[in-house]
Image 1: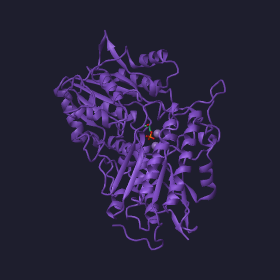
Image 2: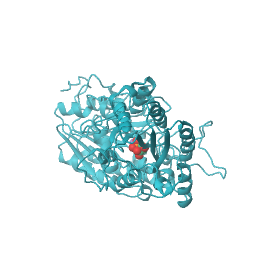
Image 3: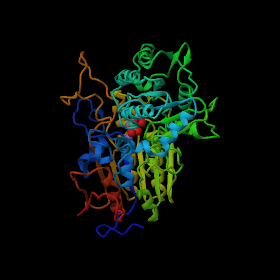
Image 4: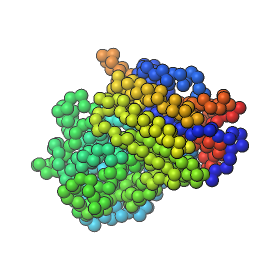
Length: 546
Ligand SMILES: O=C(O)[C@H](O)COP(=O)(O)O
Ligand SMILES: [Mn+2]
Ligand SMILES: [Mn+2]
């Protein structure tokens, strides 16, 4: 049970945390869909209510360096847990730098498994240095080590990114990596890219949104079905020619073949490492490999393999059982402690972000704490630039109903729009995404007033705030030769807002801007608004009671 907070007895109604996914504070108005959007509700919030800036990237959310952008996993982990843990990206980099990963039982079983079979080790994962789901340097280190430990054949199944890195940068990774693989393939060792495709087309679905995407990945990587090319460089060039204007994340699948035979199907006795460290988009394909009674799609053939994830992706489900690096041990989350303090909690988002406000929020656990209600609004399966409003209205309906029920003391939701539409690189659609969130807030806030509650309105990281790539030197929006701007699909390094929407305290409550204020300060702030002290392990509250 959390102790009472002496300075403030708590607001009469509920405390609502609203995450506007991908809503950063822009540095430039050029290229900011947030500046371009008509957003009277947000404008009024920033003009009339206490608001500060929070750090949402780099070391403030457990990333290895301040050059790393934030992302949903680390952002929601920090908000929900009220603490900063060294995250997957940092844990894996350290385990490799120190060599601890090679001493681990999981790596040894992967190598032993491959050697006992045909000698084939497969790596499947996101093929970039985005450091959101994976890092290509981790893959490189594992290929080098596999050779040193006597594995004969390595096959890589490369998911093209263009979502955490520039939108058509695939060849910047594929060309040098294929050269590296050619150089290291000596003395009977043979390492090649064997299949792949755009990350939004195959394999990396999340939250059960689109299983056919995972099935397509299985058929590509495991069964070797798909358009054939001689190598991955030719595949990327060929697929671009056949699909003009398609950005990397949306490219179709490809298979590398020799004389019509795929070079890297996955067979009995092989070892498979899924080398993403982040779990949301790793869980479905992992289930396809490890579940005996799997019914989500017809696997056609189920090779008996030694399978490992880079991390364990779900602590409650222990998925997968074998993993190369231990995930951050996230403890004492706000959901757990509000639950132990007897508070009923409500969490809502649409499918694309549902796990963000539940599983990520609760420290990468898929089980609820007592007194939690989780509501998922099914997302459409469409390119989101075609529906930038997404399910903002339906999430708002659900939140209003939950507020009106009077059952919940702590509520949270995530509006996916700024992020999911920001990732498409479509500027016009991204402004509409922000406008949809603004409209949703204009409906939700009066319901919070009616319930005697307050809201903290924030974001997990930026995205729609920078829709054009920045020039590396000038940090200004970069232009193509013809004067047009280069579309940007990735997150940003910008801070995010924290607004306190409070019409109940009579002006007693304010927010304190500190140099280090970040997402991990939100949990303690919520506790204080509830009239409770923070848990000892949480970072400081930003609430200032006058
Ligand atoms: O998985 C994704 O869609 C992107 O890599 C990161 O976006 P998110 O961190 O906002 O989910
Ligand atoms: Mn996000
Ligand atoms: Mn995102």
